[in-house]
Image 1 (cartoon, rainbow, N blue to C red):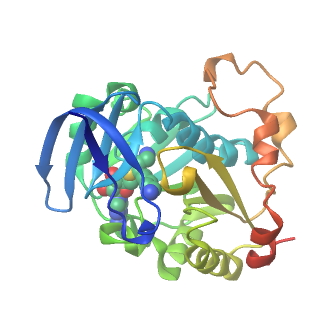
Image 2 (image 1 turned 30 degrees about the horizontal axis):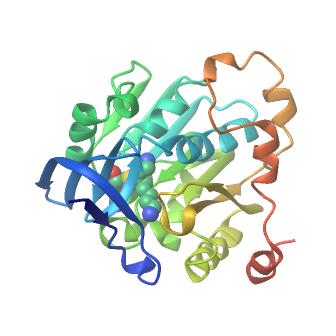
Image 3 (image 1 turned 180 degrees about the horizontal axis):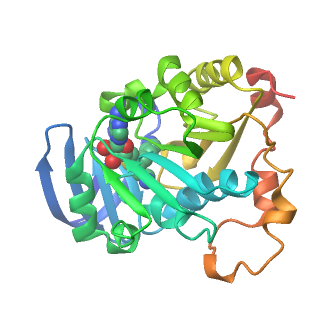
Length: 283
Ligand code: AAT
């Protein structure tokens, strides 16, 4: 008998992911959500929250390398970084690979996601105890509300705009992020799929365009997220996605152990199909 996990995501009701599983390693109801870890037959371990896939060992690099290294190489010298969400630890793991980094704060609403990931997903979470990393357990909007002019890069590694993450898709939150960034800061947000979620993405791009001089959208290819790809909004006070790229990536990058990111992908990820470009009003 084969066992299947079927994703239950309100904003992807017409086209659902289904993953074959060997067994369930963990299940619990935290104060915020249902947290589960599955051993899959072909995709390694998988973390789900409220029956939505957060990450698998099989393709997580496509997401974590792209949410992190694109803004980190777009910036001239990112020293202080904030991650909102990202409880599995994959985003902080990639941020810590940048030798110039001095400090990364991670603000995750649900401490249980971190503890469960530390236990079952060590290849994601093992760097969370790094001396340059500090963990904070509260709602991301509360964290940015009180901070001004502090971060070079903010990465919003959030779940979908249903449940506790809905607040991370509001203009109020984007405004606090802008104010928490330094004068040349960059904000990147998890921003869904350009086939299935264009109204959500357009709303995010609209907020960003009101708040930042540079706004753009890029995407990565990842079979276990709805529609097989996921994008990110890129908002910047000063730097375009590419102007520092050559200078920032001309040295020895072997320490990064990239599996997905290449300088060519960094550029091509911003190239959108015509119907998307037209709909987003991007040039
Ligand atoms: N690294 C890829 C995994 C994620 S998980 C997103 C994290 O955001 C979860 O751990 C969740 O608890 C956290 N989160 C949700 N709301 C908030 C909030 N308001 N403040 C801080 N953290 C929050 C991303 C998966 C993308 C899935 C795409 N379908």
